[in-house]
Length: 102
Image (cartoon, rainbow, N blue to C red; front, side, top):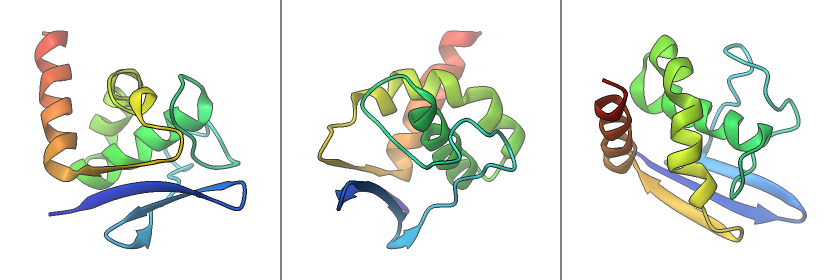
């Protein structure tokens, strides 16, 4: 099972999936060319939400469609210092968001 983890190192954010850097996915949407962020509702958290969903779902269209509600439901709640999230937790959040949107 994939594990997503974010941390802060020397004034920059680092986001890994199973120990490898998570792709920004600027090809899908250019919210934040400067990188990922979390803990609030801005452009960096939107880019993080999109990248996590694209990686976990393997469905770019679905990721684009769901990334803003995922940002508000999940990414804004991440602690400043760092966080970890399993693929199962991502899918639970996605299913809840999709159910609420019906």
